[in-house]
Length: 175
Image (cartoon, rainbow, N blue to C red; front, side, top):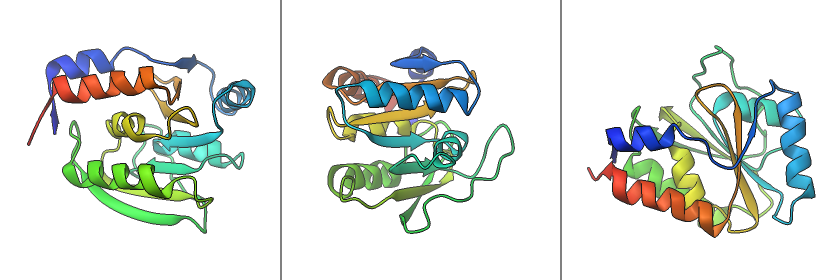
């Protein structure tokens, strides 16, 4: 699915809780929020810097990374015993391959106590929408770095799931 100009405009708005601090302070604040909430503690992390920052503190359950960062950081030390998967996704798109893989993993594999890493050949940015659409409802959080440099922390609720679904249905062109 290719993104439309309207989708890119709407995606530039922030959702959920925002943390403007650099890591590790942003990670610590986000984790305090998660710990104090009534939602679950499962963390779905989208992006290399976010995944690395949370992993350095022993946090994270599901990682979606592409190996490219604006800060030229190399993401290493993701969970060694994690189940690893790969899919291809071009910039500005959500490929059918990645969409199906994430849907299947988020609806069946997450929560089995095993860490999961999805390595994206291409770009992972828009896959946060798929993560929000299929995250375990009221039991998880989707966390990613906004292109403006801050951390977005979104509880997996029916409200945010409907926002993601509306964006996908209304603003992405089917390939």
